[in-house]
Length: 525
Image (cartoon, rainbow, N blue to C red; front, side, top):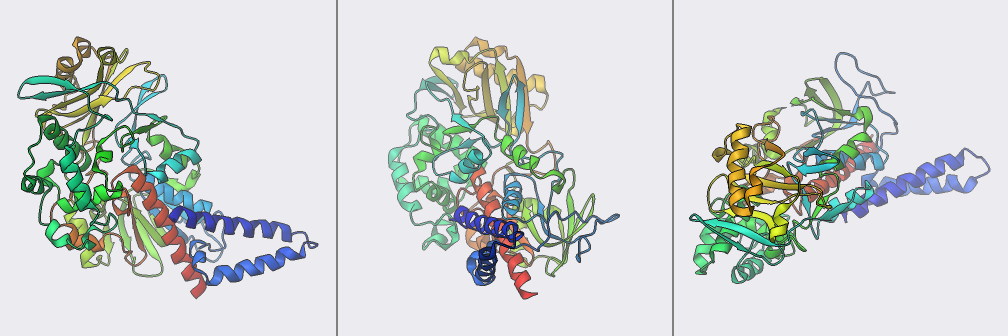
């Protein structure tokens, strides 16, 4: 529905532009009538909320120490977007598609992509250090990839997964790939998830009761004896999705995530027809790179925001390391915890401030990559997935290119249990892979390590392990704008929050909200 709204806005704006061009020919009298009709329609309808133009094209950036002027505005912009990840860049793209050119994107890092990042392994081969998968129902990011002429390909999963438990090794083929989950447990979770709206779990009729429990608490109450494979799979999948084992994630939050996936927890854990089904050709960061290329000088890198002043007034000042930008609206496309690094004057409303302060930011995640001359494990009927019950490795998987020209094993690891010395980290993981996949694993040609908690101060937490009692107390403050501040980022999405798809959806919603607010301001002048 959001995509349709934005598309309608763009079509209306395009129609107006066509009409203006036709009006240059005085013989075309009907176009003038059409323009007047559209102007009247836009001025009063809800659809017009998306078309919030100031009547200026090519607005220049207003930085202190040398402002570039614009007619009647002294460098005033319509929108400043903080963050050049998928959310922020999608918002910028949608503003441009709607005809708004009076905006600026500022990014603290020296690159775009946010929590997506590509390791270039050479010869066009990429391994993703951050978010990488898309699956059924994640239509926003799939549509974006198509629009950017970026393809996808299937995640490899054929063969047996390898498990280590109490020193013992065993291999088993899991239907559909991914983690195994007990069918009895899955049915109970799915039934319960139908009562928890993914866009607002705190509004579930039994939210207060559910939000008292962790996922582990609830599982114990069910009296179901799980197999070792299910225990390992459940622990690994929860750790990867939420950054904590079942004992650390709130049941209400977990159920809302299942509700997002059409109340099918098994689809969240599967590769085939599941949330890990496909990878993006060229690596997930390519989407942000392509969107950034279209922005030109509307994007500033290495430009952290330190302070936002007068967010409750008509004109807001955004203080960055490259100067002060004056704007009418601000899209804050950041993890809520990162918002704490910005000083807000005046202080934010108490509810929003407390949500940011209490937002769980202790799941930075760490991914490693071993590269081999070929995916040798496939020859042995193995799929590259290794899941021990303890130790530094959480889960590894085959991240080779679609043609299998080289073998790539990527892995999620426990930051505190793996040395940050590259040689030692490579050796420890190679030993585990050798036990699971064969002696060839001792001889990688490349090793890469990306610890999101250490690479820069602009990530803090890749995913959000929401604990019990968080949503029922603070959830209502997540999305509502504060003055001229529009909150964005995957955490604010009303579907697939936490995934790349959620980031794209949140950027679309933020752009629409900004355009509606600007249009309302324009009508009041």
